Amino acid sequence: MKRMLPWLVTMLLAITLIALVFIMLMNSTNSSPTKGTDSAQEMQIKRLSADEIVEMTATISDVKTNLATNDYVVLTGFAFQLDSKKTKEQFEKIKDLKVKAVILKTLADMKPEDLQGTKGQDQLCAKLLDLINKTLPEGKVIQVDITDFIMTRI
Image 1 (cartoon, rainbow, N blue to C red):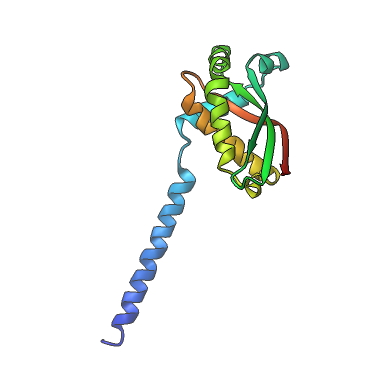
Image 2: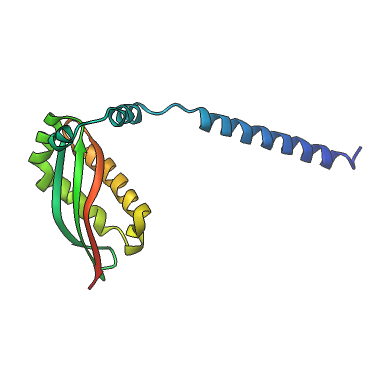
């Protein structure tokens, strides 16, 4: 009996571990999207005309700053698609005061490797989307696109 005790304990631990992994996988695959994600998906499902896109898009161009390494300079431009015309009006009022500051701070914390390729630029856009939505008084940014991007070593 003493020889079988370690085997029994090992078997019980293995079965428990397998059950926990199974439960965690089931919870992660069946999780419902959050409310914010759901409404953003609804806006993207609805196809907008070119005129509607122009009416709800604001731009910031010629953003120049050093990256975290100070060896590199970035010259960028962004297009922000907003959820309504009213939100665009609010965005236009604060874009030079708040939004540009958020962009500069975000870029100042990044390294050149962080901005390499489309994956790096997508991560930058996602980070800006999150940070800018926190600063908007009302409404939200639906999409951030990079319109200009030049990174060069000094």
